[in-house]
Image 1 (cartoon, rainbow, N blue to C red):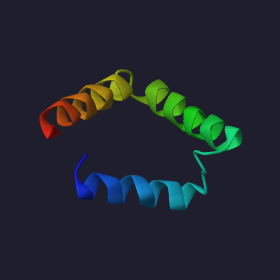
Image 2 (image 1 turned 180 degrees about the vertical axis):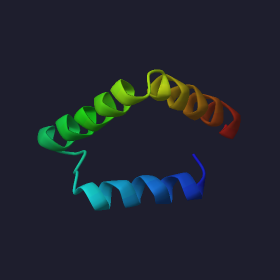
Image 3 (image 1 turned 45 degrees about the vertical axis):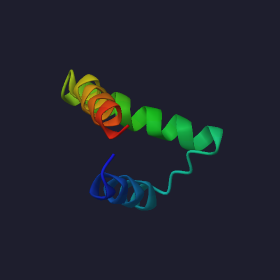
Length: 59
């Protein structure tokens, strides 16, 4: 994950107030991801693929 991607994730977490270390925060993140997937099917799978590809090439 690039520094820019990390900045965007940090900003999203800050704006939503989610704490991924807590069960409530993880549930909230899951709800947001489900909503995104409902509005645009396949988006989460595409993001997962991009993240996996970047992770594989970063090593």
